[in-house]
Length: 213
Image 1 (cartoon, rainbow, N blue to C red):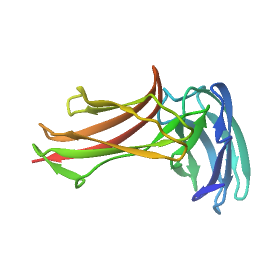
Image 2 (tube, helix red, strand yellow; image 1 turned 180 degrees about the horizontal axis):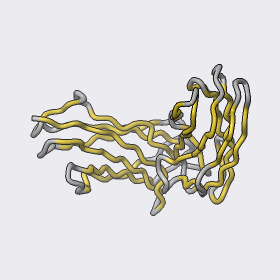
Image 3 (spheres, helix red, strand yellow; image 1 turned 45 degrees about the vertical axis):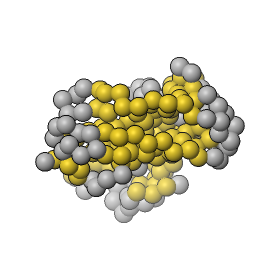
Image 4 (cartoon, helix red, strand yellow; image 1 turned 180 degrees about the vertical axis):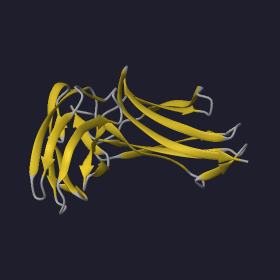
């Protein structure tokens, strides 16, 4: 089980077939204080990939050393990431806890987006072109995949930046693709990389840029 004090946690299984499935969340209190009135939620980082059904579960009390298992019904379409949120009380005070993202593989996915990042400082300058790079890794031998890069600019407009095909990839083989964006306004830019197999989106990554004068 993974740990983010004062909770040990695990979501299983780590791989499921497409469709309506169940994920089991295990939580263990490894602290020295009881946790009370825990509202437990399993959230998706991308509901297109994995949609969690229901409103969450309630644990009235989780004593030190005590472990609980909770089922969550999900609609799984493509590989994605989920995370756990707890809200309750500890020592009579409000308590909030979140897990890091948890990777859930869905179906026989041919490839994945390993990374997306901007080759620049975290705070880039207005009007300067910024080179970005995404890495695609094959999971099985495949061909005919398509990547797309988009940007959500300050103000909410969604702009297409580049699109291209992925050549034949063997399992474990990686390919890198680059594109450029020239910010024309200050604020936060959200970069998106998408990977498609035909009309089916099989992976998605995001990166954030802070642009100033």
